[in-house]
Amino acid sequence: MVRNESLDPKVDFENNTYIYPNPITGETANFVIFSPFQSRVKMKIYTMNGDLILDKDFGDTPANQYVIDQNGFVWNRKNQAGRRVARGLYYAVIRAEETLGGKNLMQTVKRFLIK
Figure 1 (cartoon, one colour):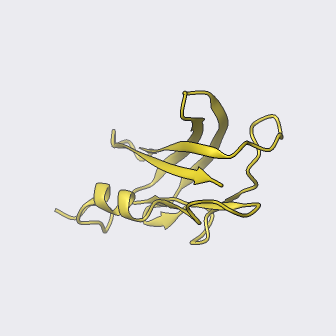
Figure 2 (tube, helix red, strand yellow):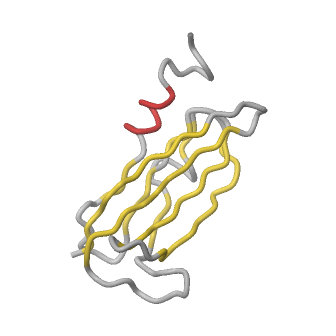
């Protein structure tokens, strides 16, 4: 069964959602997030010991679209308070929750390193 033009929304979400460059060596990183169905997309970035450093709500995204565009959300390596984060290992929890009456919820965790 094809749903929203996707044979496997979970695989599409996982494979088309990523962070680059990884490891992050420059001033910014790009979070590319794909929404296989119309959904509200949110992302939280945590330190490895579980401290929340960034909480981003991208709002509603149409089906089979990238959040923002194919270049993604450009993150300036700053936390919620506007301070630059330290080198180390972090993880992003990215969620897409269907908004057209369905109850689909997808979540992926992406690890990344800041050098």
